[in-house]
Length: 255
Image (cartoon, rainbow, N blue to C red; front, top):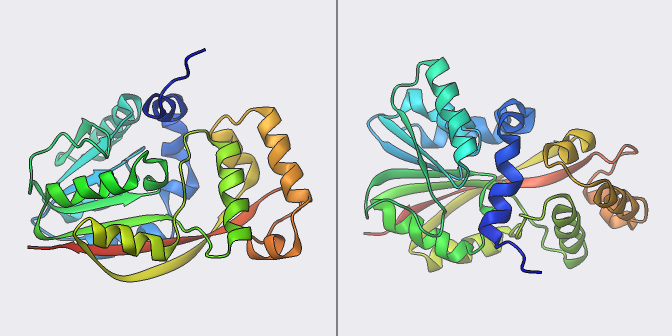
């Protein structure tokens, strides 16, 4: 039987959950989002929120920049963004459907690109970063927030495994070193990175993705059998809740 491509899987995972992501505390708030707002606030800037999801980055930045374009593969997600933007009176926010690897914008269209908790879903991160560089003006800024993969292979394997069980649209969390290398290869000069710790409450984490019961059971089985190094690093709790590292990294487009 022919399987759906990755792009279709991404849309299938997120479109039915658009309102759940609008209400998600993990996505609607956090120290990383506060910091992204501080870094990306540029009066007069035209900003692309790439992989906008339910629009939380767009909502934060719209009052602090000239214009925000929320771009996401899911038309259902963007419909929620547009509705919420209207409710909040954000007239400088527009929505455009598109994939990171094939952005529907001309070169040098934006002063700033921001992306939060999206890049680990991109089928080809290198291609997506190349597109970010293409649509940024020379000297423009790109700011990324995502879950950071641990450097240790044991911890990395465990994280990638439960991420995929929970969500088949997951591709890969990257280490900070991998982020730096990929940004540089795309013509984006990475600056200093900042790290955060993010606690994920297990029940809402799996409910948000409608994770099948068999996969939930597999994740819990892995957790119960996790070695001490894994349990300690991810601060595993009795109910399955755990904590991951996240990173914020900014990079500047070359001339």
